[in-house]
Length: 304
Image (spheres, rainbow, N blue to C red):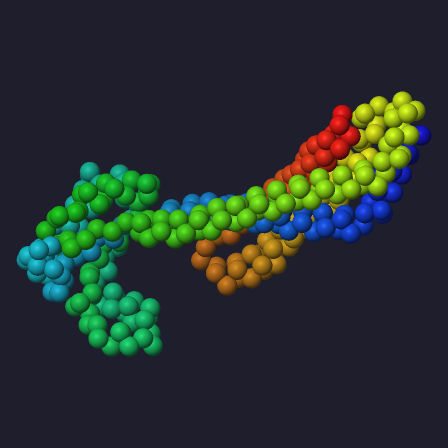
């Protein structure tokens, strides 16, 4: 009897405030979709870091005929200097850290440059001898790149030692900033959702104030009076959070895996497995948010 009464009151409240309930559903849906997207972006950044950092190389750029005189006073690196640098790479000191390395000569560097800047006028003004010959070093543990950098910085014949992870750090810093901005927007929208849920429950309680008064007179407990109102908010927010979970899974399936993964096959992307981690968390967050906001609103309205 009590269960049937509570469910009847929930249905009655939802029907009476249809427009407000739809507003709660939409705001919850949009805000939690932002939260889910930000969570997926963080997972994506983590995956890309692991993927690209493991493949990051250290480039040992050799002096060319156009290198600055203060860095390369001897001019272009001679064959003897190249041999000594390669010998150092093969030494027992560095070999434990090096997975593999290869040498890129002027012609190979020029061919790569022409391919990258095909159709660009700058490609016409660059000759092979102007491009650095380079030792590309892959490490067993990319986090130890500083060892290679320190070993070859300032060595005769070396113009510059550059860790590719420095380029990656700049990209990931931008992505992290975008993710933080998305989280900030999502947080503001969650606050809006909580306020809207609270307002909806107060309006529902106000429209049924006579019923609440009768329930008090017949000895209904505080919890029994509050429960239908709390569940109204929970039902509306659950629908919104379920829609947000569905939207997040759809983005992963159709946009990330269906489009990005096929267009950019050289990197890794989040999968449905990651989406199924985020989706339940969104539903749980929606239920918790609505329960807290509804409970707080009805307690204050009833002055219990």
